[in-house]
Image (cartoon, rainbow, N blue to C red; front, side):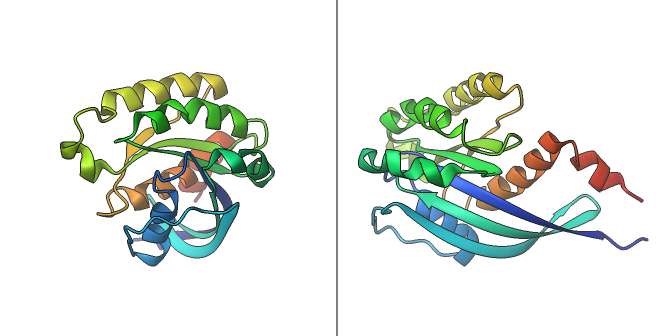
Length: 197
């Protein structure tokens, strides 16, 4: 049985969406494995550098992440645009319990699109699914999937919809692994890297 291939990769990923949707808690759950229910608005941007290993089939990716958690308040929208530059992954985050945050996703998407890397991977993230049973008008999974499908047409490439709970750690690892896979796929490198002898 052969040893797994090791590949080093650098990825700048931005998390965008309205304030209070859980962008910071997603990042902290991924990097620090912690959760806090206290809401402290992000001012401008918080940047986290993180290294880990991600295994895809027979390849082990030594990933160096630069994760940019951008402010969601309207007063900061013009400021944060310059932070989009050359991002290779974009997490479009909304809170499934607040429809207004879901309805603003196309605006965030259109704002980011001209500035990010041409092969950036986009993922639509519906956060706080641990609260779904308490919310009579939550955004349904089918609605998230429909929006993701429509956004995909703008870049002629798949934008998946993934539901998460930063509180319970549901699908947090998955969204970052998918960013890596989709970016390599957009570059046309995924199959080449996974099947290289």
